[in-house]
Image (tube, rainbow, N blue to C red; front, side, top):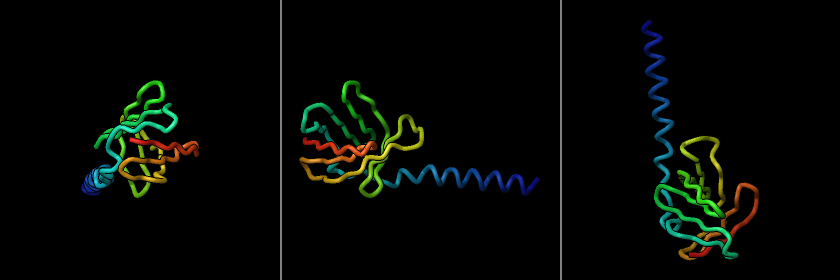
Length: 107
């Protein structure tokens, strides 16, 4: 019984540690803001907590960044959707979407 209790506590501790790992990835301040694609078709709003892509109907998602990748999740569901940052300045953002389409945004 002691072994089972120990295993359960170890499992809980590892689960909490794994889940807290995403909080260590802070977003780049240059990402925060309202973006519009150069063709005017797609709007993107990035706050400190949400990634909202709007190309007809806005879909708010939680996100975090890891290196040059934005990983989004709808209500915490996995797998994450990956957006690769190709270029980021104060006024320009180029994102490679999951379907390998490059979309260029401006503020």
